[in-house]
Length: 162
Image (cartoon, rainbow, N blue to C red; front, side):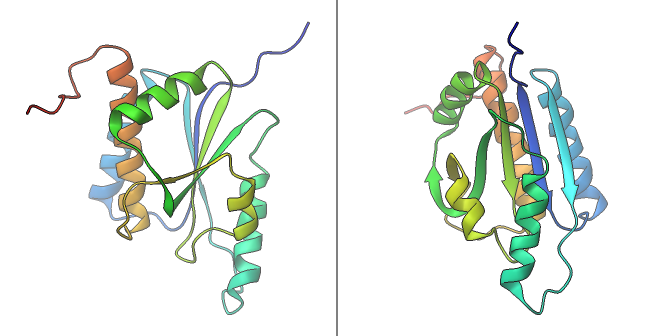
């Protein structure tokens, strides 16, 4: 009998913990998200040897790869990636939920290794602006929760009027 693919969402992020108010907000949205689907968040430590940024990025990419499983959909957050509306993200996530686990990656302050970006099934941009990594994590978690609540017919998301 074939095993079902692992479902849900895994967030891999590289960096230091944010100030407590930001961490509390991230935990709030993670908790809300967990009500809708299996969710886990893993903090990866920035690579040592940052005097050689390419080597550090490669090491960070290897750390990400150790968490990937066959059948995962890899989504790298990147300011040059595809921008989606909340509704578009919800529709995309609805299709993904039936196909296995979706792994979102937020890189370190150095960014994300070019090889890992090339391996990604999708590059997602939260904004063309450069966001602090801790803020990007909160925005992503909020948008994932919004997408799930929207799919469930909840009242959190308000459609644009006019």
